[in-house]
Length: 168
Image 1 (cartoon, rainbow, N blue to C red):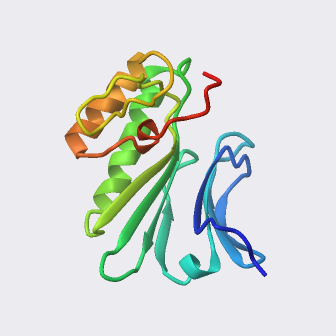
Image 2 (cartoon, helix red, strand yellow):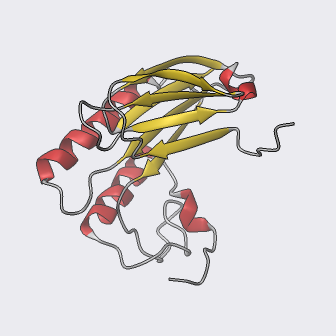
């Protein structure tokens, strides 16, 4: 009996090479990675969600997208792994362009979820319906950029709305 409560799990730093999909027991993994054993992203689907997987596309070793056919609303998922704060601005620009490309391809979906590791700090100060009061740390430059992007796209940084463990 499968006791897993997760239906969809986003993965960052898969660290394989190439791209593809595979069955892992009752789950399906789609993945996108580069030519070296660095970075890489994937999405693991429980069998019930895998049945709804309409299509998927590897964008880069930092971005993969999937379309799930569901009723009454269809779902688009973008799993990503952002460059770290010591990365060059050119790499960060390329990453955001890849996210935009994935979003454009998903505009027919009713709901779009962008998930993964943005490698930012958005702080713990509420900003409209974008950033909640339970973020961690002091906002940094990349966090400000993410917040601005979410305001434009009408997205919410959901993990800032739930209180984390007090180990801050």
